[in-house]
Amino acid sequence: MRFSSFTYLVGQGWHNMRANRLMTFASMGVLTVCMLLVGAAFLVGINIDAMVEYIGEQNQTIVYLQDGLTEEQTAAVDSAIRAIPGVVGVTYVSPEEVLQRYDSELQLDSRTSLAAAFADDIPFDANYIVVVDDLKNLSGILPQLLAIDGVTDLRSPLELSEVFLSLQRAITYAGYGMVGVLALVSIVIINNTIRITVFSRRKEIGIMKLVGATNGFIRFPFFVEGVTSGLLSAAIASGIICGAYYALIRWYGEHQNNITQMFGGSLVPLQEVWYILVVAFAAFGFVLCGIGTATSIRKHLNV
Amino acid sequence: MIDFEHVTKIYETKNDENVALEDVSLHIDEGEFVFVLGHSGAGKSTFLKLMLMEEKPTEGVVAINGQDLTRIKRRKVPYMRRQMGCVFQDFRLIPTMTVYENVAFAMRVTNISTKTIKSRVPFALSLVGLEDKMDRLPDELSGGEQQRVAVARALAHGPKLIIADEPTGNIDPEMSMDIMQLFEAINKVHITVVVVTHEHELVHKLAAKYNNRIITLAHGQIADDTAHPEVAREYAARMAERESEEVYAE
Image 1: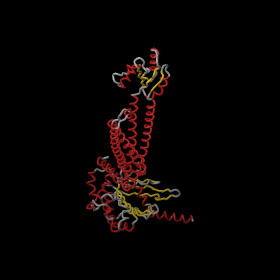
Image 2: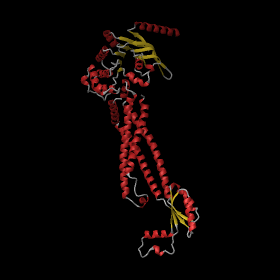
Image 3: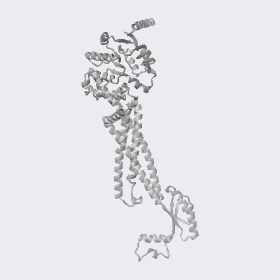
Image 4: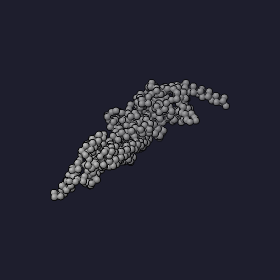
């Protein structure tokens, strides 16, 4: 194909878009909304990922020991905990250390030292701080910890982590579902737009066939139209979602509380995600609209 | 140039079949000017569609320049069509494009360079006497002028064959003569011209003046061919035979 022919055909594709501007707007609007939905699902997903990871880093299960264990018994508990697969960190905290920590955290004045007051009869039990390699394994590890002789009680972030893991799964599936729906909707919408263009230009197409235009020549402008709609929708969706996410990050930073602090206190920064969104949207727009156009011209153009 | 060898075309519908052409054989030489005459239903449209590759014959061979059109690959069809120029009764101009653009469009979509288009379009329009109306829209022109634009479009890419389907069907009688004379002029530069029409009077008037060949179609067969007088005798004999058969059957 000559370069002048190429530019002519691209121009024709854009001309078609302007000529059917209402339909172009409608299809681009639907495509943009589809992309925004998927983009939002993606952003929620990666933020939940980040939060789960943060909580995972904080994962500390406290294993309380029976009062008055001998040194050998404590050593036996120690080795029993270390023997459980998935346990990556075991730290012994003696009753004195617990007392010390309370003392410093409460920050009583120097005259009334907690440590001094309870030095003879410490009211705390010794404990182990256990860290596991993956939160997913925690539910399997906890009963094993409890079963160890000399362990009285546990405190773990299990419930919270389970909520987050199920949320993460749900978002992932919803994301996949949305991508599927988007793909279908885009193809149908582009199909319909192209059908209308074919109808409004049937006379020109008839003449093109008669004077000996090849099928590629007749199809090309439609392809340009479909792909341009897809890419423009991607650009609009990228702009909207990046802007909205930026605003959300700022709002989140200004409205901190205990709960947000618990999850790390910040969202995934925009500079880590914007290019993923833009590239994914552009690829979606290009591929889906390309498929939509290819299927519809085959069906409606009959060339 | 154009060869029909024992061509039969049958259109089959659910419970009926319609014989549009029956065992038609003819040869048109390069540089000839041929009128194909016939009433509606005589097989003119089918004759055209076979040449334009819009239909394939049920039996027989249609060839242009020795190329068997029935064996041509689908993707080669556009390149075959570029060897001819077509003119239709309804002009088939694009109403939103100017005269210039209409001619340029046909060249553009057949991958001709911009440079060639820029030089060729005004030339083609000057051949049909419309060089001063290049920027007009088709609706601003008379029927005869619109048809001349269509002729310019058919000529622009330099075809060796021009096929016209009822080119005077939508224009007034004086203009009809002009258009036909335009085709005669085109034929002078050794372009083969095939004009399919039902306008007997006009055709006979022109043929008398320019000595054109007239092929008459009737009932899907060649009823007369001025280049081959024996055709008419054979056709008459066939018809008589068929008539007697029918009488006998009754």
